Structure formats: C-alpha cells, structure tokens
Length: 60
Image (cartoon, rainbow, N blue to C red):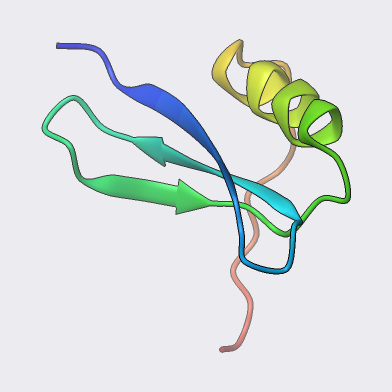
C-alpha cells in the first residue's frame, strides 16, 4: 500500500503536514506554515519527488 500526505491545522491556526508510510507510520513532519495553500504546495512537491538535494549528516 502506498503512503500518503496529511494536512492539518494546529491550535495556533498554522498549517502543517505529515507523511505516512503505507503501514500508517509517520515518516516525516513539516514546519508550520501560515497558510493551508503553502503547506499543501510543499507537500505536493515532496510527494512528487521534486526535492532532489544532497543528503548530509549533521550533529543533533
């Protein structure tokens, strides 16, 4: 089963998204966006694979 993206509005009225794997596990969460449209645009790009950048390891 394919994963999915979910949009949601926080109590402070900002919008976020999360990406869930096919098994329902949350694999990514977003920052807060001022508008639903901005959150949805970023989620759409992410799910379409439009973010093709380097993967770097950073200190926690």
